[in-house]
Every structure is written in structure tokens, then in C-alpha cells.
Length: 205
Image (cartoon, rainbow, N blue to C red):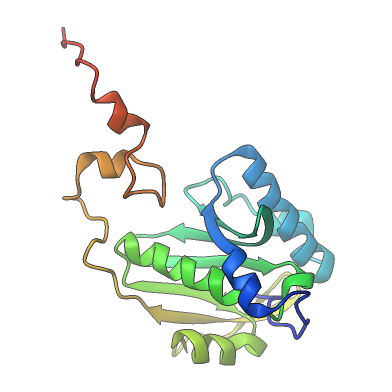
């Protein structure tokens, strides 16, 4: 949740850039390479974070990576991890040349909406103190009380918490079984296993 808010003027108008932006779930090796590249640029390049601290062993362990794209180019990423009663927002980064426009809000809103669709009511993240006003103002977050600040990778952090509001069509254990089989984030569109149901089932022996 860091290295994000910067007054860099976008090359094109904000409205045009916003129209061309969309957020997608990383699904392929190429997607994950783009995620890693942007995080390396931002956290390793700008903040001097060592490789082993940035790529901490949590990227392939049940995490969801969202990619902010401007046209076909990935310009921002965020990692989300899922715990029993809360989601955790991590490693949110926007390429420096694309800060100051609508990208940060577009990506953050998509991340919050993704967690809400999965039924989560609480989200937390670690924020550098300089960014606390942004998260308070734009997402009604609060610094968790009675939780002391802490430091890692050379920066100070505080814990922030956010209230989520799952929609009426949030994913639950009672969702259609095919919905639970579909690719992450693409729950409303029939997938490959929906189509496979047209084949006759092989009898169990």
C-alpha cells in the first residue's frame, strides 16, 4: 500500500486514461511476470527493497494478483491474500509515469470490490504513515487502535482496517456449483467446466 501517491502529471487527459483502464486477474505465467516486473520497479527500484523481502514466499500461496491495464499495458498491480474473516491488501504499486491520474483509485476500488464479491466484510493493510490520510479520505479506513507502529524493509507502517459491504450476489457456500468452479473473478460467465457438463457423465464403477 505504498510508493503510490505522487503528483506526476499524466501524459493524456484523466478522462481518456480512465476510459482505457481496466483491471484483470493475473492468470498466466506472463501475467505473473508483469506483476513481478512492476513490483521490482517500484519496491526494489524506488524503495531499495531487497529481492528476498519483496518476493516473500506469499505470491503463489493462495494469493490473488490484480493487474491495472492501460490498453494492453500493465501499469499497476496489487496482491490480495485471504484469511478466515478478513482480506489483506498488499504490494499495491503504480508505475511512476502513471501516477497522478485515475489509476490508483481504479485499482484500489477493484480490489475492494473483489473482496466484497467473495463475501468479505473486513479488509486490512499495512500503510506508511504518509499515506494514512489518503486511505482515510478515499476509503473510510482507520488505523487499528492499540496496535503499535512497526517497521520492515526500511520503512515504518501502521495497520489500517476497512469495512466492506458484500453485494447481494456475493459468493457463498450455497452458490451454484459451477460458479465455484469458474476462474477467479469471472464468476458470472460460463467457463470451460460449464461447457463440459454437456458431455454424458462417465458412470462410477
